[in-house]
Structures are given as C-alpha cells and as structure tokens.
Figure 1 (cartoon, rainbow, N blue to C red):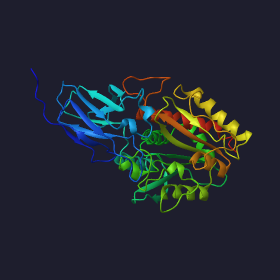
Figure 2 (cartoon, rainbow, N blue to C red):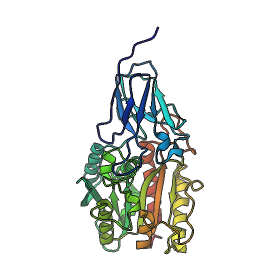
Figure 3 (tube, one colour):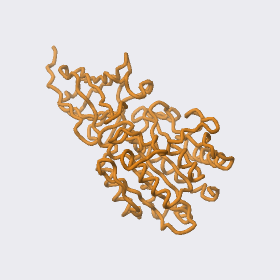
Figure 4 (tube, one colour):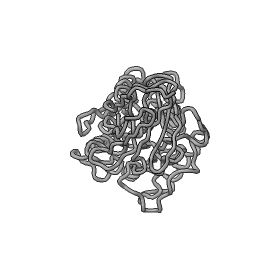
Length: 383
C-alpha cells in the first residue's frame, strides 16, 4: 500500500540560509538549487530547514545545479550534514551523479535541517564575543563595519605593552567556511582556562589579536565566497577600500596600528580532505628565516596532533610568483613575519575519518588548542 505523505515545508529564510525550491511536489524526491552569492556567480553553500517529514519514510533531496557550482569537483567524496535540533549534526548518505548532489534521510523526527557544513550562527557569534570579554578576559579593541553595517570585532588578549609580540588570527573571510569560526571558538575556549600554564607563558611575551568573523554579511546571507558587494575578501588585500571591502580595509588599518609578528588566516577547503597550511614561499620577500619558521610550525603542530599533516595541500608557488592579493601573502610581505593560511576540510579528515560527523565544529575547536600550543612554542624564534 502506498502511504500518502504530507507536503514538505522548506525554508531558508534565516541566518545563513540558502536554497531555492525547484519542485517539492513529491515529498520523497525534492528538487532544489543553491543561490549564488549577491553580485557574484559563486555558489556552493546550502542550508535549509524541512518540516513535514514522515518518520520512517526516506526523503531524498537533489541539488540540481551542483555541477555548476564554484568547486564542482569537491562533491566527490562529500556527504551533507543534517540535524534535528540545529545543534547536533551528523552526515547523511550523499552521491554526486550527473551534475546533481543527491542526499537522503530516513528521519526519526518531523523536521530537520540540512547544510553544507555545520553552520556558525550570528547569535552564537554574539555570545562568543560576550564570552571573550568576560570569561576569557579579552578587550574589545576596535569595531569595524561591514557593507551592511554589521559589527566586525577586533579582540585582544593582553595589555599591548611595548616589546610584546603581536599574534593575529582572523577567520571566515570566505563566509561559507563556517569551520573557521568554530576554530575561533576553540581559541577563546582555551583562553578561558585561567590556570593554563602554557597560555600564561605565551601571554607573558605576546598579545593575541582576533577577528572571529571577517565577513558577517556574507555569512548571514548564505554566501560561499563574497561579501555583500560580491567581493572575495581574500583577493582584496592589495586594493581594499571602504566602499567595496571595508572588512579588509578595517583589518589592515588595525594591523598597521599595532603591528604583526605572526599571522594565521583560518579557512576551509572544499576539495582536500585534510588539515594543512599554505605559506608565503612565492613572496618576493620570502627568506630562509621565514622558510624555517614555516617548517617549525608545521613540524610542531604535526607532532601534537594527527589531525594536521604536511603531505597534502596546495601546489607551492614558484619564487616571486605569489598571489599578493591573498591575506597570507600580503601580511607576510608587509610585516616580514610568519604568515600562514590554515585550511580545514568540508568533508572529513582522511587521516582520522569519522563516519558519523566527518570534519566538524567540535574538531575545529579542538584543533585550535593545538595551534595555540604551537604558537606558544615558537614565541622565542618569531623575531
């Protein structure tokens, strides 16, 4: 006997939501499409809620334009995430066939959320900023404004005393890379541990400067790569402006004011199922000193956690051939400092696969603690 299913209620009208319904007439097989970024052809992020699911009945969803997405090769080996409460996320069966991303769920509850990766909400961001200034003892040093007027907070842990190292971490230049703000939550979580001897030693010689979310407009609108003006912020570090990329313009002004001795730009990579870093080997100012610092960072972090590795990653730039519009290269060149892009996967970490969650917000937070330990280890050699 065929069971008559109720119509599904599909919504993406919320923070970081992104989906367009093409055909939901059959609740067993729904056809959808991802919306491109505002003023940009980029798209890959999706996040939507489904109500009216029938527990015990498999419901399937097809993102019909996945083959046209910005990184369509990334769908191979990828599995979508789902949640019944928007808090606990798990991976679901997913296939990429004939240019369509297809995933399904046999639900246990009548509503669920689906997303490209575990989303980090603006509400949680606001709570994180409050935690940073209370339990982590951080200072709200400056506040920039996005294109649409959202706050871009610069936090500092430390007193700004003369002679102290300036350690900078920024995240979510690319708004769809939500794992990067989960990472920043992990940084702040560790700074809340007032009896952490290693952090006490770090903070005795260094101040930490954090921008947890560089692109709040893009994150809110469910973008993959760009801000509200269609600008890829990680391609704006040579021509930033208050009109098109005020987010980068603000960060650069603050770096110029306070200085930079180490810079980490936190990202997520769509294709590569590993955690890795990209450095400044193609910069015109790349020196043996910076080369050694990069090697030390990678070696030490890899010795602390199997989540990090140095085998898989981006092709190294030839000498003098770096893309100087990238934050990592621009900051490294400007301040003659160790400057790295840290990438985490949208998929899973193939070195330590987790069939239930894949790479996740929790693993992003945990990685941050190891990175801070590596930074602490290196303070004596940065200058």
